[in-house]
Length: 128
Image 1 (cartoon, rainbow, N blue to C red):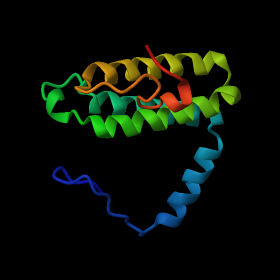
Image 2: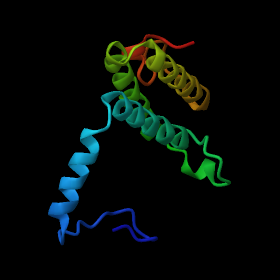
Image 3: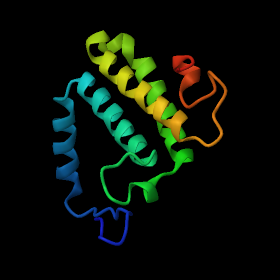
């Protein structure tokens, strides 16, 4: 369980067998495309926060470009690998969001990466 002053999770095994069975049943009903897009949206949201783009007043305090780089690179790998499977209808908006994050990263960086060396660009190619 999470506490207000902690980001750690404590596993409670009491009654977890029935809960796990229900979760497995629940996840089995979710189409792969939803799992993929949900994961991508979580990566996008986390990257935006780490870029300091959060709507909160303390957005600048949350900025961490090293963490943003990792999240954007993971997102680029996911989107690139999943695109043939999920089709352009779903991949297009994910690519657009990824590109926006890559451009925002470039703007936020004090020392810009060389073209093709920014986060995720080994998967997407250079972003201008």
